[in-house]
Image (tube, rainbow, N blue to C red; front, side):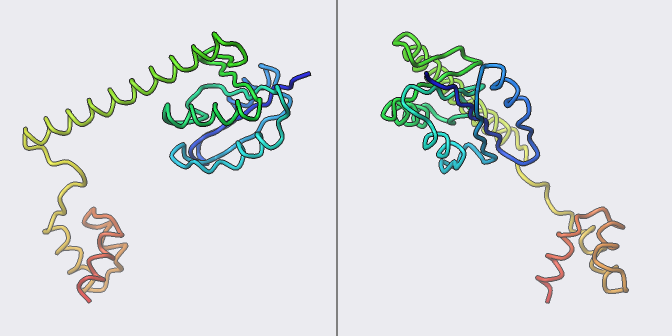
Length: 184
């Protein structure tokens, strides 16, 4: 009999896996493999361990497809690898199960739509940045206030610590330290 194996991933240690764990358990996962790693990084030890552990006809279960891969290309590569290992994929949120032909079709359609949405977001962001530049809006870090910096450096010369001087003139401590290093 095939087993359901859960896979949960978050990008940073500040994020919590408990919600994914709970949903995977509710779906019948007998074992859950986890990664705390950015989706940009393709090396995922938890996923590798799951694939090594899985047997023919087991079902890899994720809460959402984006937990498995960031791009359609990456998702398709992972699904092809799973297929080679005779492991099926189930996504709870998108209600996809690739153990059937219809489920495999739905997977491809959902993956394409997700990639299309990401491209739209990227395009809108680029358009917004371009429009802001046309309006003369400065993007990125705010310009360094030279008067504040000069005041902080004078305070350091008069005996304040760089931390105290930065706090006094409301500059970042690292900014004062960086400027002191440059001056030397």
